[in-house]
Length: 121
Image (cartoon, rainbow, N blue to C red; front, top):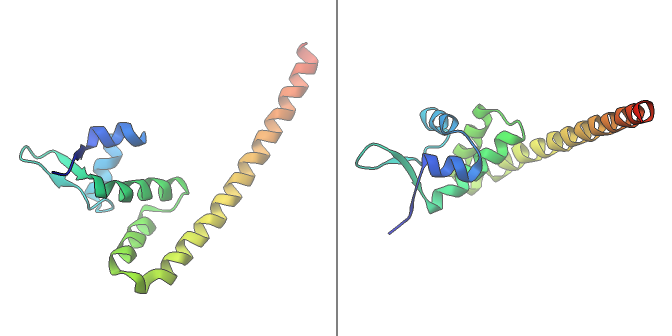
């Protein structure tokens, strides 16, 4: 028998709010949710990789519309591989830029700290 992962389990496991998971279900971004006899949403072990994928893509600032498109392409099979590659390649470039921006911000803050330390100590 497959283990069931309910929204509260998934929320804790991936540090994502239950509200967000319900929203993703409502918008058919995570269409892997099933309902038990009491109407509670759950997924099976095999569905966790799609949840991980959505969370990761969202962290790269990919829009929900484009995440949904990407998942549709997966369902369509290998003939969509080039289009999926382009989506991921674009997000990688964006993530690299975001990392550089954060590195620049960290360096700025470190320099400010050094200035304060010289003045205060």
